[in-house]
Length: 106
Image (spheres, rainbow, N blue to C red):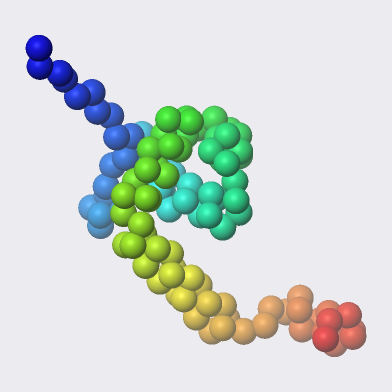
């Protein structure tokens, strides 16, 4: 008797090839960063996002990450470098300058 494979990935790729959780405005990379950067469990991520995405969708996002780990880690590194460059280009905020002038920051 042949078996049938039931598959629902919960993941869609946008026109630029970025993975999103299907039917939501949540990128897979957001779930991944919650998990690897903040150490959040799937249940904590679900709670933080108020139950949308679902636990199944969160696990699908993490599965997608581990199936595409090298390319997603490279994207995370690229975004981190881009953020650092933008922060450096923006310079010190007015609030920090004021606190520094008052001797409240080194």
